[in-house]
Image (cartoon, rainbow, N blue to C red):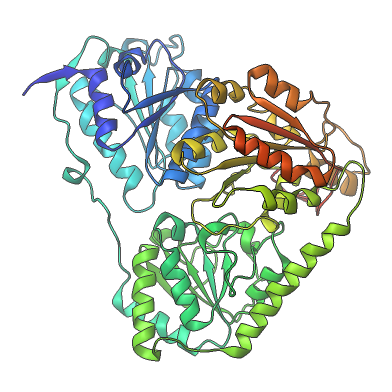
Length: 563
């Protein structure tokens, strides 16, 4: 069999999987791999200014494109800097393949320079974390990594390759196509008897509700989910953080649940007598994991690709392990066999539409808010006016960006990206860059507060160098809002570490070579946003807003809340 250089083989294995973007920062242990990209146009190395930014970009790329992607980073801190972003990929079920160029094996386990137990660090965060023991195992173990990342429940994987297995080494050129070593386009159907039981429960329901989760997006099951809801007159509520699972303009759509969502959605969840939790773990932010939102008498039908998640957070009437698209199609076909093309439920439908109308009225009333600087709620209707059709939006953690959950509308899957329950402040800008690279034909916006933006603002340089036209909105309330609210309400207004002094973010953008805008009046926001999108350049729009104190993130005895 012909031979190829070991570093060349790594790149060939990635390319065979359709990877066309690799994120990272160069290092002496990875040059054997990275230099194989020289002169290539079919696979692009996006060098960030910090490895954390590379992980965030990879996450955004994977989620917007629906494809796997990769990070390549060097030994020691070059790879440990990925940890926060890879933890986000784990929470968000994103197939990010991390390839760490490690120190030579002779330097391991003897406190060598940059020698760390990288496998041990990443194992809790990944579907698989391994170190390659010899050069001949590089290709088989990369295939194992993709199998772990893409089969069933998706997620990040970690492959550690010591430097001495790469430098000057060759391997057999056995580059296989993915279909030769892992299931491709796998659709796991639900058990037939479980489908029958679920249909019986659904047909007996008087107030059915569809809770559509991230699995609906990952499986591209939105059409099947909506058809099922229409057939049974089901209220539609997305699980928190997956608001783009179903079109928000639909007459059966109520709104997003959770503390930063719509109270009307919480009422719908509480009123439902049957909930079809499709492609969702029923996350903590949606229901608080207790019966304060759901009625204890509500019957839950839960569908998840991961059997471990079924019944984990709530007891279920019917549990189904399977792909959301395949199971939704099974349920839809069975319902139509039993009940015909539609089963009208005018009483419940009217209640759903009433809740949706109440939400609209409540949000419209916010137009009367006043203040200088402006209240952050006033920003969102102006953004809605100016955002291009099917614009992708990434939300950073934070109080002011958190208002987006109830105030932005999404019609197309893979349009809404957030911290996926991870709560990592600073992810917004890097993830936003990744979404634009993953779907270059769609407009992309990131929304963050002043605290979060400065976590990763150096990636403005990456955006400029790689010409990534992300429009970034920075809502500057000059504080860490959730923590300040907590200190105000539970610690006698003893403010410490929560008030921030910032540069002018529009000027900072200009220093980096991006375009900067500063907006102080709500009426000017839409025109500025349109101008930014039309520029085709990386842009930062700073909007000073009032401090806004929502309900505290945690009690004094509780755990620290998301920013």
